[in-house]
Image (cartoon, rainbow, N blue to C red; front, side, top):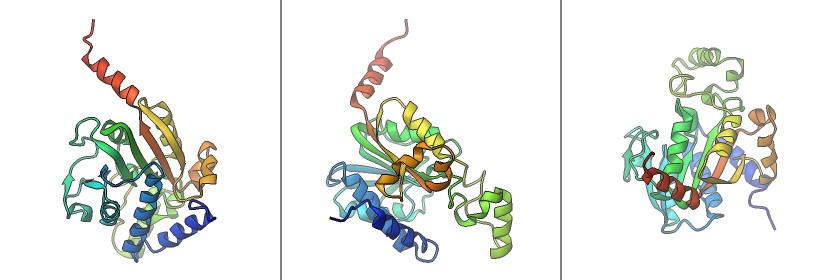
Length: 253
């Protein structure tokens, strides 16, 4: 039997990744399908409320709705394609949802675009229901694609990579460090997940690599160069949320 998370999956994803700039519908369609497959290992998406934070392209909305999810897209940009079929323009650091709203909170490749990732990551956890799933992934700075369209020249300095891109293309890149993109590490994500109260870590591994490569994220330095993209799959701890609610209702003495 073929392993659905083996090397063949990784080959397919990297093959699709190569056409992200020339054929984004193909790349994001494949990534959306793969993401939904990963989530359905934890249970069917049918009938479940999925809040996609930093939704961006429309392919994720199409895939989640195709699987029967009650899907709500969130993006800071009101013109984002995923919002055209019904969504909310909002800041990921101040999500307009009550605590424990969603069965699944999904965020793909957002954290490298926010200046304070912990605030956004904590918001994702806050709006997940007790027992709900948080799917969080991002591209770390030192990965081969850490500079996005300026890669791999970002390894030689962010500003040098931006200047090179401008000389070659005649315009600045969309993703500019300190403006629309920020440096984030695998180490940061691992520390946050380990120290964040109220969640259980289901998986912490390179998103595009086979499941057996999960150990990479435990090796300092190596994980920054070879993980490409960190996937954190978390379950909201109902007991922890109950404790927080009790604490909030208890007056200070």
